[in-house]
Image (cartoon, rainbow, N blue to C red; front, side, top):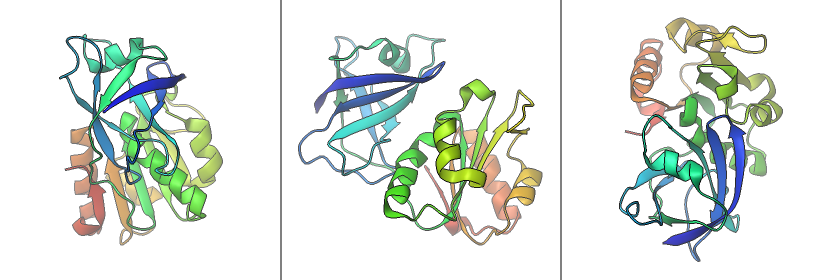
Length: 219
């Protein structure tokens, strides 16, 4: 499916939000992703997974995409695209879906599946009682920080690995941090980020009493 880029917005130094056409009859569940390629010669077969950050009922699709400029890859190319350029989309897929109130733990661009979920919960009035722990290297890496603070209030916890700044915790989402900031390990957990982080967080959650069946992550 070919879709045209309608709007491009810069969110951080290396993250852009792309609004694109929505094919007729296209459906997805908040948290799901699709394979995306660029409709340009030599790039049409190079597919990468990106999460929808719009709501299923909206008449457009939206993606929040972090660009990696250290090599000439798909995200670097996407960063150079302009309004009117086209992307190629597949059908929706993905294991991260909302299963009830809980704690969302994200590392960097791993927060993207949670954006659509939080938008959906806000729309339906079910956001209260959900918490987001968002880990990044520095403050300038925090995607949609003001939006998360606005909708989640004290249930938004930003933790920075490389900076110690007011308004943010400092360090990593390790066992001690989880122990100090999660009051109930029998609830639902949603984890998304780099693979080593997912593995470490899941292990710590289980050691602290979380049920492995209640931890949702992309396998």
